[in-house]
Length: 247
Ligand SMILES: C[S@@+](CC[C@H](N)C(=O)[O-])C[C@H]1O[C@@H](n2cnc3c(N)ncnc32)[C@H](O)[C@@H]1O
Image (cartoon, rainbow, N blue to C red; front, side, top):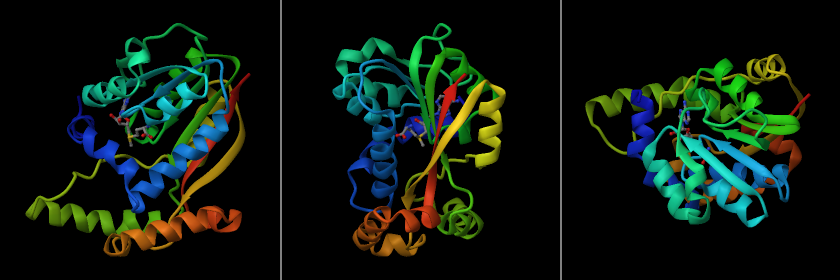
């Protein structure tokens, strides 16, 4: 495991609990989960979540009639996912996005959200295309590099926080992902034989880091409100969900 992968393993419980928070992190992860559930739609069918984390999305999809499978590189994440969805425990496995342990065309839908940034992108996209049936859909979630809150965070907040954490270790380690642009991801999907059908903005953040940390409930409420306005969502979305179909 790389250093970043180990960080995900060590912080699995903290990652999982971010879903319950009425704070900015809670808003970001919940808004993209809700949008993903809508975009995948009701089952039946076979769905794979690559980098499934603690299984939050898969648990909701299982309730909506899907036969769910998931992989993650972090064993602790897979343990949490198995505890959350005991009926799917033998389909939740430790594996890498770049080397999926499934047959060709095994799934109707493949989801990979908040994960490509930590992978070898071309290899991970080629693998998701391989296990997807013809006509099947991929749902790819990326951080939006151009959102005002993201630009501010990446250029100012993260470099400062890394320096401070080196001197005084506190809180969760900051995962060292690379930005993956919408164009780069779309090109990788097209090269792997998928056609991009839609790009949906999610996770509007108006109050920037670290101000949002001082008034987390207010930041949560403002984010939720902005999420309901298509125009605010487009401008302030911190993430994008790409829907692509295998030719
Ligand atoms: C930001 S979390 C997102 C988790 C989940 N998709 C969600 O939205 O709740 C990223 C996840 O990707 C996993 N991951 C990172 N690199 C991976 C790789 N190469 N293959 C599979 N999983 C990976 C991490 O262990 C972590 O669980």
